[in-house]
Image (cartoon, rainbow, N blue to C red):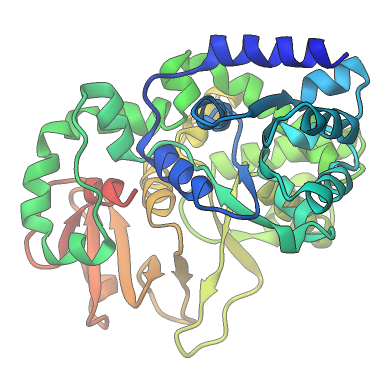
Length: 393
């Protein structure tokens, strides 16, 4: 039994070992090396979690790669495999796709408590819920492996690795940084629409339908016991979001579109967010109460275009721009003030309005630290080229 596990492990390493990792993946590898507790790497399918894990294990002594899907198909116990591997001298354990196994938090906790071995897990975005709701939570640090940044895409597309920048650097040195990124603006649109997902770039841009269906049919079920009507509502919700203009999504409008209650709509949005297929952006009150009748939502970069192709519908260009911005800055809140037109986003004390090349500045008139993010290389006044935010990681 264990011989087959080791044999399969070696085959996976031999066939999936990459010579060059993403810059973000390399940062995570260095973090894992210095980590004394369990590391859980979560993220969408196709972002490179397995490649990162295999690369890390290949460069470790006494390490073993364990594929959870293989254990499931063979009817093997995770704890028994780990325990036997430890008795054979293995000390570094990488468990891939762990979310497919039931009761895995208990198996991992028991093994870790007995051995204090180095353990690295990978799984879907949903594994965070399983960790936080179990006794494993105090023993695990979770890391999110996001899709490509524009900087990473430029690196793999052209071989040029631009310097990673902070938000402060981008806003204070925008003219200089705009000159650095200008030669690569021509590949911005293909990145935006197709290649933010590493699997789409390295394999095929046709990977999206399979990933979307696996998220809905498999990942959602791992989070909640659902029936076909729930799955159908999930697809309808994604279609509703893809065809929506940038702005706040009304739960009432979504509920009406689905023929369901507002409570159901809120529950479904949260479920899809936990599965990683959408991002909920909370309101920033700025002295006012946040608006709770609706929510602002972004989609993982390139997934909006992929879903539009999947549903054979049109996508709003403005929504793609906002997906790009949110994808890179991460910790954004949307600005909503009653009775006023306001900027789009608040990030670390700055406010940002997102727009095309001809976007005006009217929403920024009351903002001392306001910037207009445009699809252009203009750095005049408070203009900031959108491409610069692609250098944040």
